[in-house]
Image (tube, rainbow, N blue to C red; front, side):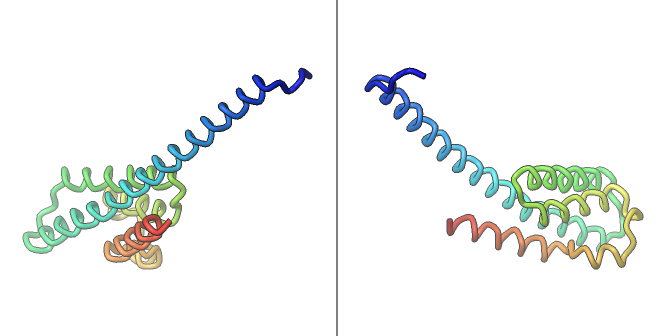
Length: 134
């Protein structure tokens, strides 16, 4: 092993400083990605609520919209899982599967899974508040 010269120490310090700076940037980017995904949960919840209201008013299923909601919730589930937000990710996956095939889960499972739009929006808002206080 070579001697620790001032040049070697300077290079180590420089490398360590760059590493810490990159770590801080990565942490901030992850925070921004988390905030973005959580806000998307809220907008998906509201978009879903509007579709459900429309469905209740006219009784006509819009398969294109149901396909969109299925993909939206499923993609959110994957994103949240990647960001380390597993409870909300699982709920999003259930929503996505339900919009893809409403008969896949029985009513009892859906009630126990706690995937109401209000609950999911409250959970997203709570996690957002936690992130913003860090």
